[in-house]
Image (cartoon, rainbow, N blue to C red; front, side):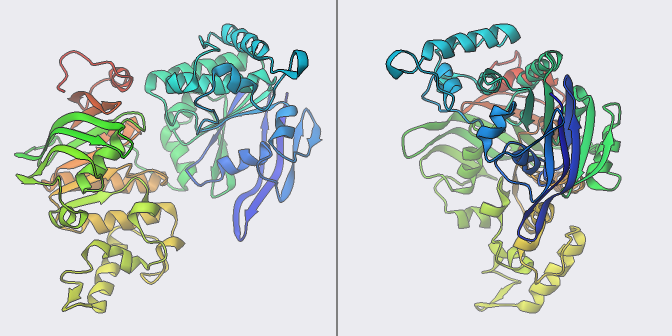
Length: 504
C-alpha cells in the first residue's frame, strides 16, 4: 500500500507544527523522517493516525483520499503505529493486549481469547519474534514488549507501519534486533515510516530520508549521506559532531558513594546498595535503559529522596540527610533531566532564572534586597557567553526554544563555584547545534578539576564524554568500565550481564 501525504498543515494556536508537508512511502520501503525533538515529526504521524486533524492537506492510500475521524478509522484503513511509549496494559497477557479494542467473540458472546493466541503465534512464528501469547506483559523485557506492539499492528493487517522513536528505551542489542524485524517487514511488502533523531540508526536502516526542521521539510537525503550532512540539514548550519577532549587528569577522590539504597514510599527498591567514586577532573558516565535507578541516584545526591540509606560524601562531607538548600550550598550543580519541571520557572524572566539558587546570597542579594543592576549585568554576560538566543534578559524562560532553555540552565549551574556537577540527560530535546555547545561546556567543567556525574540514555553521548562508564540495571551496578569499552559489551551490561574484569 502506497502512502502519500500532500501539503499537511497542523496549527496549535499561532504555532505551526506542520507546514505544508508532503511525503510518499512506497510498499517495501523504509522511509525515515529525521528531525530534532520538536521538529514536528510526531505531530505529522499523529495526523496520519487520526489522533489529530490536519488544518490543511490530504492523506492518500493507493491514490484514494482518506478522512480519519480517529485512530479506529486509520487502523481499519491499514495503518499501524508503534508508539515511543508503549500502549499496553501491564497486567494483561500478550493475547489480551493484542485483542484489546479488536475483540472477537465466540459462543454466547464470550471473548475468543484462543483466536487471539493463535494470531499471536502465527505472527510470532512468521517473523521469529518468540513471544508467548500467555505471558503477562509486565513480566516481559522492554524489547519483547515492543514486539507485542508490532504484533498488535500486524494482527489488524496493517500495510503501513509507523515506528515513532522506537529505540528510545532499547539496549543496543535490542535496537539491532528491531532493525532486523523492520527489514523483515519491509521484505513482506509493508510501507514503513521510521521516525528518529539518531543519525546512526537512520543511516543504517532507511531507504530514503526526509528531514524536517521547525515543522517544514527542508530536504531529502540518501542513507549514504554523512552524519555531518544530515546534521547540517537538521540544524541549518554546519555542526561539529565529534567531542574533542584531552585525556582526563584525575585528582583525588571527590565524590564517594557507599552502599547507597533508595526505597520509595511503597517499599520498592530503586537503588540496591550501590557504591562508586568520582575523582576531581573526571567524568563518570551512568549508562542504562531509562528506569533502572538513574533518576533516583541524582535525586538522592541532591537530597530529593526521603528514604535513603548509606553514604554520599563530597570532599569528605556527608550529604545524606542534608536539605536540598544545604546540598546546593555545598557546591553541587544540577542539570536536571526535565528542564521545565525541575530546571526553570517558565513564567520568570531569563535573568530571574539565572539566579534562582543564589537569590539569597551575594552578589545578587544585599541585606535582603535583590541587586537589579548586578543581576542585569550578570544575565547579559551569560546570554553572550552561552549563546542564548533570546529577545533579552527580560523575556520569560517559557518564550525560549528547548535548546535555549537548556542553555539557561547550563549557564546558571556552570557559573557557580562547583564542587560537583550532576548532569542528567543534559542534551535531551535540544538540537544538534546546542548539543555541540553543551558537550564543550561539560568537558570544560571537567578540565577545571570538577568531578562530573553524567547520566544519559544516549550511549553515543556517554561514550564521547565519559572517562569511565558505570552501568545500572534494576538498581544495581553491573560494572564500571573504561570509556572505550565496545558498544556490544555495554549493551550486554545494560541487559544485566556482568563482564569479566569490571569493577562493581
